Structures are given as structure tokens and as C-alpha cells.
Amino acid sequence: MLDKERWFSEPCKDAGNAISYEIDAHLHHEKSEFQTIDIYKTTHFGHLMAIDGFIMLTQRDNFLYHEMMTHPALFTHDRPQDVVVVGGGDCGTLREVLRHAGVKSCLQVEIDERVTRLAEQYFPELCSANEDPRAAFKFDDAIRHMAEAEDESLDVIIIDSTDPVGPAEGLFGPSFMANCFRTLRPGGIIVQQSESPLIHQELIGQIRGNMTQAGFDAIKTLCFPQSCYPSGWWSATMAGKGRDLSQYRQADIAQRDFKTEYYNEGIHAGALHLPEFLRRALEHSPENASNSQ
Amino acid sequence: MLDKERWFSEPCKDAGNAISYEIDAHLHHEKSEFQTIDIYKTTHFGHLMAIDGFIMLTQRDNFLYHEMMTHPALFTHDRPQDVVVVGGGDCGTLREVLRHAGVKSCLQVEIDERVTRLAEQYFPELCSANEDPRAAFKFDDAIRHMAEAEDESLDVIIIDSTDPVGPAEGLFGPSFMANCFRTLRPGGIIVQQSESPLIHQELIGQIRGNMTQAGFDAIKTLCFPQSCYPSGWWSATMAGKGRDLSQYRQADIAQRDFKTEYYNEGIHAGALHLPEFLRRALEHSPENASNSQ
Image 1 (cartoon, rainbow over the protein chains, first blue to last red):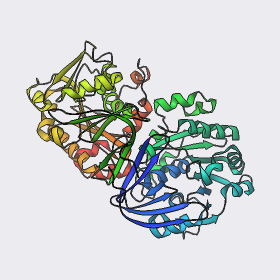
Image 2: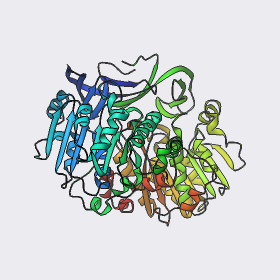
Image 3: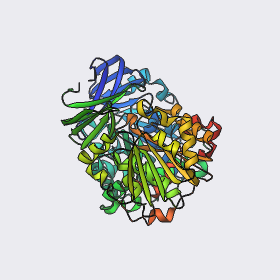
Image 4: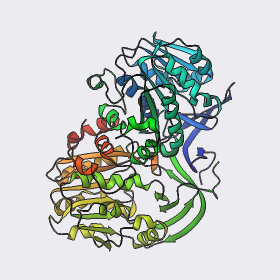
């Protein structure tokens, strides 16, 4: 039905559905040390990057994911200064973090340097903050990096990873989460991309369980649309170290000195409320009492 | 890439993307007087209905659309008693309306009786209120029905139509909207499905323009996830006749005596806030001042 010469399709085995984009050109294909990376030029969504056949982002709709992975956490933290992005090789998360003038350092720890080099070439707008003096890059295993990182040295950690298979699997485990907890200062916040509310409820519960086990006090799963990911609906799960997550810096959001495409105060407030089915599914786990309506 | 024997795909010409479902069986195919109707059994989303090749609903995810087309309007209206559903042949919207005990009548005006008969067969759970004494059915052209309907005889009108091409085109025009305005009592509310926030911003602006032109005072476009529609993100636009839409019956939502899967008070509150890009796109039209943040 979809001509395979004209369409790139990502079938989702867990859900029996697929998302496809019509393409004008297959611009790049390579096997890096870690994974297969493809870049396509789509007809309507700009450039598209796929890793091991899974769509990572398109130029047209990545703003949804990147803004929701960053601004809710950064506007909840009282004074975020030192931030680590785990994964995030396309640099879009780094860019959004550095829109916050108070941030003093943002280190991106991505295992595959090729993702970043290709982002610089095909998604230059996402790399516009790469030369910012506050930006730093380490191309290494984030599991090792976080194991070796200093106690209480960070304010916000953002786990902007691929799905929990392959290189990213360890980023969804309890020992990695324990190291994140240890390296956060009191009042610190972690954010982890936590897949689809419609398809991956069990995984969301596991992520929240890891966070509770690591010692986090408050947990919130924020849902948002993301058209290029399975089901078109995605989530980010935040956890706070010795802090609540229901209050945030409302006045600072209203007075922010940068432009967003999706995020604003109303979107932030709304995203703190779970859909009914997810609220019910998660409330069986004791760690989720803090995300109730 | 997707085996056409195993997958049903709906390409979206306006966006160069497609949504596909893996299928176990093609259960039904017919050409009714108005359109082509297909029913598939999917591997993970239950039954799927397509009209003229466009996915109308699946059993697994229709709750998102049906709840957001009904409950925000019905919980905003002070005392909704008489409701008309325009289109809505699958009966899911009717079912949600009749969950409200105060509703005295709900008339579904669907042009194609075959859609409802097939829904009864393949989506019986959506038809569970069809025998409710408050439910009524008219299989006729809703444009004619609304032109002939009495002045100020309705509290809520819900336009649950197909896309604005083919039989539904007239439902998106100014003269139909004028008749809806005329038939609503003071304080009445209209809701129209208004396509994808990501893809159809221009259409959303036109719908809102028609509403303003017809005399409605307040307009709100509510966005919500809907995985089986193009971009996985959809919207419903509400308008109020001589009333505001920012206040709603919060206590009644909290004390509702029926179960929802998506909708709750937090979801309602959140949906009243537009994403930034849509707020900016719509604010150029004067009718949209009422939907600002």
C-alpha cells in the first residue's frame, strides 16, 4: 500500500501499529560503532533521523519532545545551575537547557559521537547552542560516567535515551538510577523519557519503581503529543530529591526571555495531571501516590 | 516494508505521513449509499473502522476522542438537557453524552445508517446506550435537519463528523454553523471535531471564524492525543452562545458517577490551554482572543 521506495516505516512490535513518512531522499546511511544511523529527507517533516530503524526525530515535530524533556524540570528546580544530559546526541535537549540563563554548565554524555556529528550536519538548528561556553560534550558510556561522577554535584539530570533495548538498556536499570540520585544535590531533579502512555504502561511503572527505590521523594509522569513516536503520544517522568514537584516557578515561565513552540505555563500545569487510565494503572504502585489528581 | 496483506495504512496527503495497523482479518467491506466502509480486526487495537480509506476509530483508542468531544462541553454547560450529535454514527459520542444523568434527550443525526448498523455489530460496547429511552436516531442529512430544527431548542450540539471532504464538507461551512447557533438556547455550547493541531491549523482558524461569524461569544480549541488519526494529535473546538467557556462544573466532575478512561478535572483544565505555536497562529484572528493563555 505504501510504496517502499517512497516511504520510511517504523512498525512497533509492541502495538501492531506503524508510523511512516514519505521521503524525497535517503541522505545518509552508516553503521557506527554502536548502531545503524539513517538520515532521510521527508516530504513534509524535514530531515528525519532513524537509529536501528527507530525514528529518533524529525525537524518538524521534535520541539514537543525536547521542550517537555527540559522546561518542566528546569522551571520546577529553584535555581538549576549544573545539568547533565544522558544521551541526547542530537543536541536538541542541550539547546533547550541552555535557553535558561541561570544554567552555568550543561554536559552532554552521549555514547555515539556519530549521532552528534550527523546532527550538526542535518539538524544544525538543534546544534545552535553547541558553541555556547556553558556546553560540554563527552562521548562515552553514561553508565560509567555517572558511576564515577561526584556526589551532590548536579542540579538536573535528563535521560534523553533511545528505547530500553540495545545500548540504552542499562539507563533504565536501578543501579544507574541510584547513581543519578547520589550525584544530585538536595532539591535536584531527574527526568527520564518514559515511552508511550498508551503502549508502555508497564515500563512507566518500572521507571517509577526504580526512582522510588533510589530514594526520590516525588514522581510525576508528564504526557505530551509526539507524532513521530509509536502511538503519537509520549511521556517524560520526573523525580525530585527531597522536594515536591507540584510547585514550579510560574512567574519565571511567564517572563521567560526565550520562545517556545509547545511549552507554556498552562501546558506545564496540564501535564501534571495523568489521564484516568494511567492514574489507575500507576496508583497500585505505592511510589505513585504523589502523581494523583 | 509493511506487507500489504498484513497492514492497513492510511496515508495523509496533507502531511506526508501515514498511520498503519497490523491486521488479522478484513471482516467487512461495503459500498453504502454514501461511502465505502471497511472493518478490520487488528492485532493489538481491536476492531478498526475505515470510511473511504480513512480510519474512523479503533476499539482500543476511541475513548480519547469520544470523551473529549463530550465531557468538556457537558461539564461546562450549567444544565445540559437536550443534545444533538451530528454524525457520530458509531454511537460512541451518544454513549458518553448519556452518561450524564441530567441529559433528557440525545438525538444522533447520521446520514449513513450503515455506519450505525456496523457499529452495533463490530463495536457493541459503543452502542451500549442505544436502547436508553433518552436516545433517538435519525438517519438523514444533518444540514437539512439543523435548517429545519426549532429556534432555541437545544443545549449542546456535537459535530462528530468525518473530515471536511465528501459528505461532511457542508458541516464545516458558515450556513450550517449559523443554524446551529440559532437552534441553541442561550448559554448553549457547540463542539466540533477540528482535526490535527499540527497539520490543520488553517482549518482550525476557519472553524473558529465560522463560529464567530455565527454569533458565538467564546471559543476554545482543546487538543488531545488520538493515536489513530494523522499526527496522533487531534482537537475539538467549543463555542459558547452568550457564555464563557473557561469556567466549568469542577465539583460535578470530581463527583461524577461514571468511569472515564482519559477525562478528569485536571485533563479538562489542561486542555483549555493552547500550545504556544497554535496560540500564536490563532491569535491573529480576533475571534481567538478568548482562547489566550
